Image (cartoon, rainbow, N blue to C red; front, side):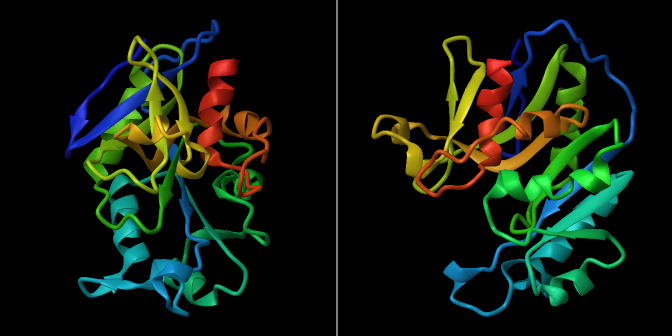
Amino acid sequence: MTLTCDILFAVLYLICMTDKKAHSPSRAPFAVILLAAGKGTRMKSDLPKAMHPIAGQSMIRHVLDTVEALSPARVVVVLGPEMEQVAEAVTPYKTVIQSERLGTGHAVLQARSVLLDFKGDIVVLCADTPLITADTVRELLAIRLNAASCSIAVLGFQSENPAGYGRLRCGADGGLEEIIEDLEATESERQIKLCNSGIMAFDGGRLFQFLDKVGKNNSKGEYYLTDVIACARAN
């Protein structure tokens, strides 16, 4: 089963599980994992990427404004080593450290100790997406909750110049089959214009189970969060 909904020129795609565990809609609390460990190397600056200012405040502050409008039950911010400036900027939220930068999947795993007992949905947001809106995240959560047996909802977007972005590969029925990182894509896969935003909503009871199955057999030797899609399909 696949549902789509146009939101701000983006497309929400669902990964729907085929097992017998159905998920009924609820108003259960949800948590947010905010990824903010990026160094900003490509920005040619010593300032952490999340701290670069836009319209008078840091990128991460824009994202936190959105998070606060959503009133999540818990917020966990994933930082890299020696990022005291970012830690101060996200006070009073809980922070965890990704000591080694081994990819986005590895970054999310750092929040396991804080969220292991959490049973609601978990939304993964990125500190370098300052234009994400609360309405978009609410819609993503609603779709995750309202689709029977759906464990993951992914926010994607169409781009005429998709170079550098992960591609959303869909099956003949329109269902999302996998997310292919640009470095791992074939020439034909690079022609796909439906791209990954990096923003996902998960059944919190399954997120870390999926991540435990993710390997790092790729060109960067990293644990990609995007590989949870293929893991979910394989399940």
